[in-house]
Amino acid sequence: MYFRKKILRLSESDASGVLYFAQQFRMAQELFEEYLEETGISLRESLEKGEYLLPVVHAEADFFAPIKVGDELELGLQLARLGNSSFTLRCLFKSVGSDRIVGTTTIVHVAIARSSWSKMPIPKSLVSVLEALGPLVSETNETV
Picture 1 (tube, rainbow, N blue to C red):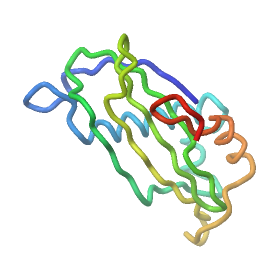
Picture 2: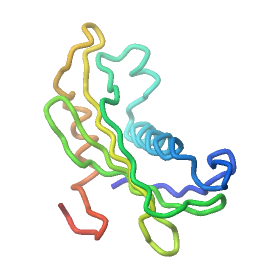
Picture 3: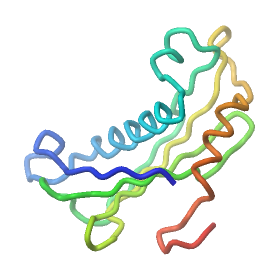
Picture 4: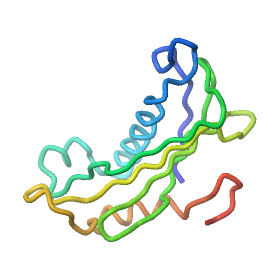
């Protein structure tokens, strides 16, 4: 699992001062991008001249408690599923201090060849990076 702490900023909230729903997806995507960069995969290079792309084909979010401006969160990135040409990432949003999970995202990416825009097997170099996220851990900290 890959972790990062985050404080909710005013620009990420709605008019009531709680997390604007779309921001949860943005935070999860940024966490994935940071993880890739830390493992040596340059998103910029991949987008400009890589052999494959990783578009999102499904995304969902759950909100279990309000996240308010100034709240400190711990975001955790997990590999939920690894297939031949697609993978599912789950991001847990925990309230720092209480360890309460206040939200989750589940995002499915598919590997496609840049040249044909056709589905392709996930490159082995990416598979090892994804597997390093470890097994899926449930909200109760049990391995699934």
